[in-house]
Image (cartoon, rainbow, N blue to C red):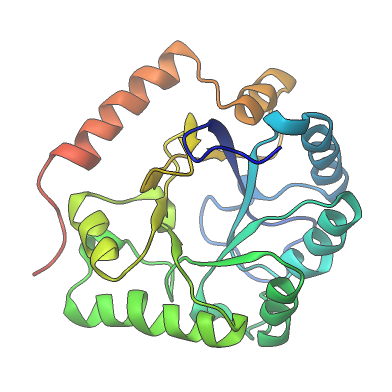
Length: 233
């Protein structure tokens, strides 16, 4: 049955799978999961049927094509891959041919910027590089327009939202936890990390939050959506 755009669901974020083949950024290792763990989660998603979460990947690691793509295809699942354009073709990351393979397999290519920068602090030259140039390169490789974006580090504010909307981006995926609607511009996601407890994983799959996380999320949303933008002129 086709989903209504106003129906709520969880959106998951994966990063790397298996052993990294590039130097990781500080604190990044916790976001990598084993192939076995990844497959277990995909099987859980399949079993959820109509309540299954949306699947997304950030950064454009080589494991997106080497591991995620075949495992998704085995299960008939689709995903959104938010890529860093400047990493394409570098060791441990997707190649241009990989990006085309993902798109040709029916997956969606999204914008994660060029170089993994805080979008709140971009000046005019930064917006050109991180929004327009990166998006155009991804569209050229995918052979289709890139209309979705995911904020690096989950960092955004009113200025970022307004700038992306002005660029024609249809939705900004965040790391705010909770449930998302396909009709919304801001779409919260739930991050999968290494060593999550069964309960934490179940909460992520369902878009549920503990009271403490809910309180932190509320404060974070107030800061991101109500306070003045932090970006450069």
